[in-house]
Amino acid sequence: MNISDVARRAGLPVKTIRYYEEIGLVRPARGANGYRAFDERDLHKLAFIGRARALGFSVEDCRALLRLYEDTGRASAEVRQLTRDHLAEIDRKLAELQQMRATLARLVDACAGDARPDCPILDDLRDHAFQARSDVE
Amino acid sequence: MNISDVARRAGLPVKTIRYYEEIGLVRPARGANGYRAFDERDLHKLAFIGRARALGFSVEDCRALLRLYEDTGRASAEVRQLTRDHLAEIDRKLAELQQMRATLARLVDACAGDARPDCPILDDLRDHAFQARSDVE
DNA sequence: CTTGACCCTCCAGTAACTGGAATCCTTATG
DNA sequence: CATAAGGATTCCAGTTACTGGAGGGTCAAG
Image (cartoon, rainbow over all chains, first blue to last red; front, side, top):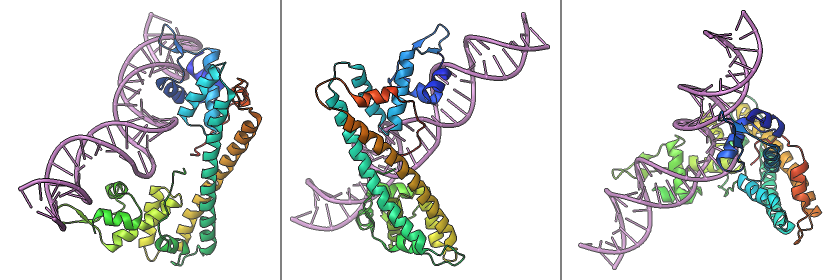
């Protein structure tokens, strides 16, 4: 399989697949012409990575999951712990986003949004003390 | 005011303030010794930026908000629209995170998490078709 | 006069790609 | 057989919003 076939079947951009090879997540064979030659195993791995990324796992998490996935004798406990950690992180982000959403919704409601210059949104940004931000987004 | 005073009062790291100057968000004066000399106005701007960043606005959004903030004759409608767009983006991210959370929670529940190798989490990653990801995180 | 706390600039690195340039290979058509 | 389109390759640069560190100047206290 050439790279565009794999890209289509795995649902990933061609560029992304080359990048995954560059960082060592997949190691496709090479044909005589220098083209990458993917087999079904490569395709499965890429689809696996795509799915894990879609669930918000980092690329390094994907590397760990892939290693666990290929170790047929591993304990499920390790996978479960990695997933639980990830879940906790998602919960933290959810809480933070919900907090933001509430504040912004309140501000949008309070703002007339007309041609006058009065704007509670800017007033709020001016008046409120800075609150430590974390890494949501 | 020296940079560390401003950093403390605005709640931002020193490095971040230097960075904000570099990208033109603030333009503090300079003393004879080359040190940045911030006035109250600079401090207010930095606190304003910090607050907007804490609410998830991008740095470029902050630049726009700051411009609107300093334009005393502007209509509140423009600020409101920027905020509404941002709110819509947050809602999109919230929905996506909630979807992820549900899937992961289901998987964690299904996984025994013991010394045996069977693991529904890895099974799921293997079996499910890739779903287009967006830019949450 | 030295020490330590600040300050400066510049360079490099982070995550996870994405875009583009220049070039090579394959395949179909005239 | 020439050529043109489409796909492949590599390499370089850029994105976001900082963060860390090296190497060196400045200031206030003792």
